[in-house]
Length: 213
Image: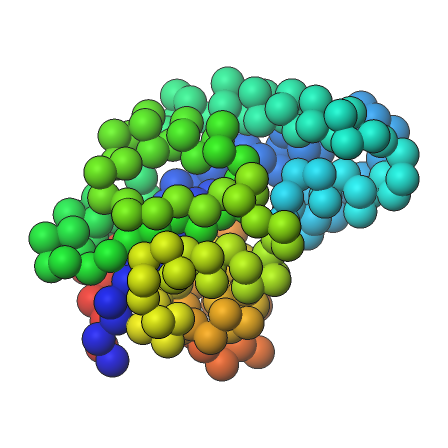
């Protein structure tokens, strides 16, 4: 089908940075006494930062403390990832072509705006996006459909006419819950991990030569 809008997750989907997020969380969580493995940290890297902290340390921190820890984590991540900041191969060309073709585009991410700004301004790609929905804009994070549903609403496009680009099973589940098809970018997870989802229309390693069939 012809899609009227492309919705992009950010981390692991537009930039290949998830190992840096996992590393930063792994360090901080263990400093806080979690005694958590790197693999378990990877599994917990979805949704809002405050939700992650609550899953690992239920009831331990105040909202103010969770906000501070979240900011500390993002500052660590940005320091380590900044020298490597770049779009996944082929995405720059896809953004330009889609923009020229009149396809509306949005970012729908569980990242805080501090991190989204770090990417879109650092890579000078803000001009391509008609809407940005961050963790700060939703009450219920992924896999609740609110993030992508809000993107569609802000673009004034029917959810069924939106195509989501995601890298994680929880993100694909979010798209499915929102009634949207999804393209999977296998930067962090294997193709086999998405076998149970009915909304996946393609699995790609990057955006080079990407075309919808």
